[in-house]
Length: 322
Image (cartoon, rainbow, N blue to C red; front, side, top):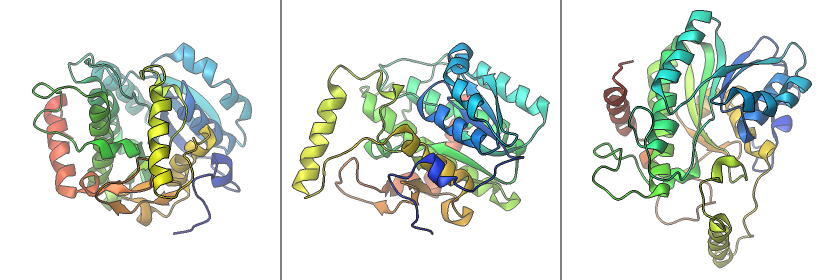
């Protein structure tokens, strides 16, 4: 594994010298933040990007720079996708399948964080339903469109450390709702989904991986109370100071999106397939207490048996088998 990229690498640096002409990429969540930047750099390097978003008007406005910077045959088309509605997810997937064109990468970027307790259109707890089940159905329905040599990249988070998935009570029917525990469950699910998708598809040359973009100021924190993010950073900095480490610094959006495009087109597939990466590097497994911003992945998020169990539970919940 090359050590040439790290926490401060940007999308442009990661893709420097790489021509993506003729490549086709699906990116979810292109109405803000990481999704827009991911689409921008891919189109600027020649890829045809299909950007999925719930609010197409917002996405069209947010992606004006994507179209402006598209080069070498690159471009952007938008499709409607509401991950909190399986009707919308299935309609989006059906339209892509009917179109029939292959994808060289699918970057499952969209998501919500720390939402108040609620439910999706299908009755699933909001974060698990949106972050995991929506992408689970979408990716599986279009799996045959991912060309041999292609990759599925699930944007997860270090937030997976807050909780393993709870397959007995995924909707908090019997346990008190905690927005961060819920977020942790959904992000662990993103990683486990990549593990099992990778196992199922690698024989035909399609691989899957999960990434953590890092701490970035985007719309993702819109459900946090005033001052909550600042207080969290202050607590982290106390821990870092006690460990003799420098204070936490947010990444820029181009730095945050770098690991996604690195995992999709730069990293050796045998290194990232079925794994979890951050800072453009494959992460080591960590156990025990650790700073929320220290690198590493929990072993339960990469457990093959856990990944299979989540797959089965997810099929049961959405009423489809893949």
